[in-house]
Image (cartoon, rainbow, N blue to C red; front, side, top):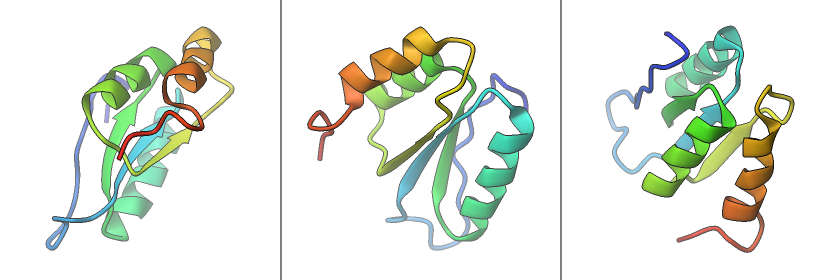
Length: 91
């Protein structure tokens, strides 16, 4: 999977499964976590930068975001908190 590729994955019975956004600048980490969560029946999406994660979060509802806080574009990670942090989640 390339760092720019975004994939929504899920096996049979995935409808109604929780959506998880995996944000990490390391492709191997994104892939490893994504495979494990998909095998467990979750729907997964991927972002390789904080900016990309913000675009996803503003366009799609996620039940959980796994966010690597040590990434090159830390400004975007800080923006994440102001945009989607505690008290700002949507239902």
